[in-house]
Image 1: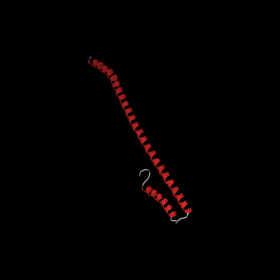
Image 2: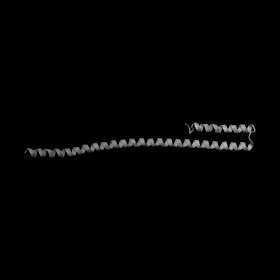
Image 3: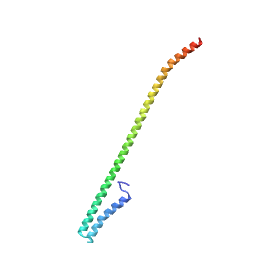
Image 4: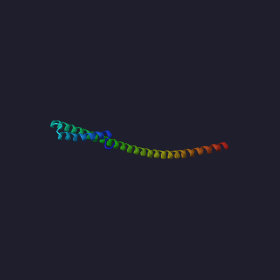
Length: 122
């Protein structure tokens, strides 16, 4: 299904083009009068305009949908990358905080343990 046509649409397009030729042949062989020929050409012309404009509109909608999906994928990828970077930054901050807190707690605790051992020994 390329350019908005499927097998059914192609068959309709072929029938539409054949109708122009059939109308010309019928008029050339004097099987229809001038008014009938004009009516058939108007119907064929109107049908062709409807078919082509609807095909253009459908392919336009499909291309807009494709562009929207590609943009959304790009935004999602960007969001994922940004989220990964933010998480890495937060992990680094957590590690710095934990090392700082552990150092700040370790020094006084070592002092308390030393004083406690000194008091227990005598």
